Image 1 (cartoon, rainbow, N blue to C red):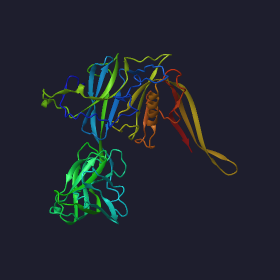
Image 2 (cartoon, one colour):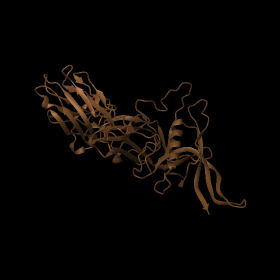
Image 3 (cartoon, helix red, strand yellow):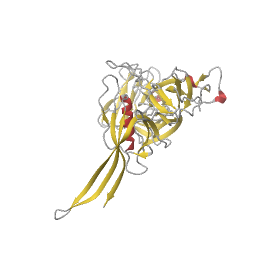
Image 4 (cartoon, rainbow, N blue to C red):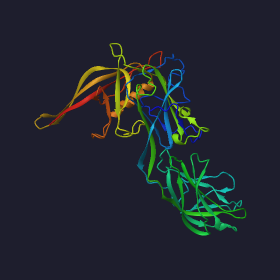
Length: 469
């Protein structure tokens, strides 16, 4: 369903979300909105020749946006005609995915010999750093300068996962000694903070007052749904001037943390003839847009409305041509390649809805050959017995000259056929309703001497017939 002319209640953030995953194996190639596309780029010593990818109008076009951090976002595909007019806006369908199970805790929780990998962030405004004192003891002593606040002592996620600490409920166990001095020494508090750059910090939790002497407690906080942070920190502070903070820590670890990562994928399937405003017989460009919030037409406020077509454009494509039927003759032809994988691959989250992605490619797919391999078993008296023979039917897949990004895309697509050897664990590449395996190299020819185009070829195996003794 197209959403042109319909309205969207926005929770406006004015943030350009660039955490999305747009696979290079996507049937439509996208570039970040601030970068030149292939047709827009001016390359030195290269004669500019635009490339317009051609589809047949009934070809299924399946797209995906993977956004692991901002799972509350909404994504839309804007379709514009060659004059830049928006003709259709299609919503991506969001699916929340529970990812790998994790067991999260800090590193170096008992400080046997060093402070590392703990890091002090000190803004320089009356804060004292933690330092390693002796086995199983770190100290922040504000006596020099009469300081009342410790630095933020922080760590990244220990398994190195690039997204950082996942959303969910946490408890930091803190065990040590409050040796602070002054009339408010027993009002010391601990604060939980998070950051993505180690410079700007957000407070997510605060403890109750910590009495003087030995302490042991859990500092609870929650990272909101849809948000990841690179660093988790804690800090201690004490009341008004006249107090001095002195904290000794023996142990700090996570008593509670999320058990798995959660991320979102956004899927969309359409063809040129099925749209509210059909684009069959025309050329179109595609834009991936994002807006925070949800579609809620019953509570729209006309004084604050925005339209979906005004959502922030994040990615753009070059022009694509949609023909009622693609030419197939002695001079030209194309094939529709279907592909999917059993597990996440090439930046695409699988199995998603289980349907194939598809890419139409101008190509020649004709010349056959047979390949045979066999294994033998040597016996006594110089006899050799053949134990298996494998007959492989192959066909040569050859592209026309096209941009390098299209060859990168094809290479990733042919790699989808790799699996774990089981029926349910095998990838699939289909051409002309036949399963194919890419057993040989993907060979690129010499680049065009004038234009930024190149061709490629590879032998694809139709299947295996195996005779085994």
